[in-house]
Picture 1: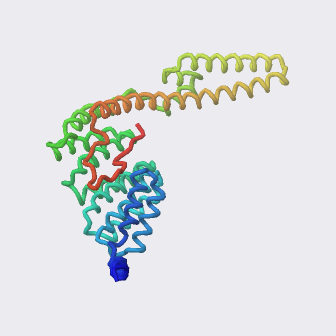
Picture 2: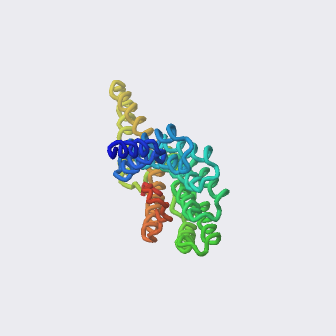
Picture 3: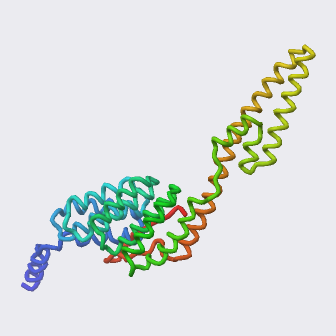
Length: 305
């Protein structure tokens, strides 16, 4: 009788409804915590298919996208975040997902789409805790494009729009520094090319490549003089090849002058950009931001600096 009673209890307990996906969710969560992101994404997607009515499905959908982002598969992360936004428009995670889409575009190297996505985020979540970082990052992306004036304007906006944010002071300081970007030393590639066309090597001297300029001048002068000399001696079999070589060095001098001017500009821009990057590093702000609840390990931001 007792045996029958215990068996009946066991059958009854087995028949009770177990919280849907409880064990499966634990398994997916453990994969995520162990940084096995791709398998975690697969498990979370399986949960969404098997249990479409779970109350926490927005969080599970977010974990799918976050898993792809943390695994570096940003092309898959973007539509996964967009799926959450479209499917669960009232979720508290929509704000974070909108911001993370912008992150993914930036990490993929698509600055223009990154800026557009960040501006879209700011238009919807101007008072979000993530807004100062998003606004600040737009300024950084303008620096990558050497748009010094625009970067200064944006960082001034950060300082005035979020005066109580930790980004305010750093933004104001960076805005002052960036103003001098338009006054950086610069050499015109066109002017450099014209100068070398008139006097071989002079364009390189103009761009700071004095030794290269003198070498170019001497090469063209010696070869040109030799060609004239052999032509007067009617030794055309020597004069013609030497003349061709002189023309080659002449054209190369013009080309190298243009390249020297562009290199000159890039070097000064690079040094200036490095200075700004150092200011950002020293501020200790880049990459800061509020952490997500439920202990989600998510790459909030990354940088190529």
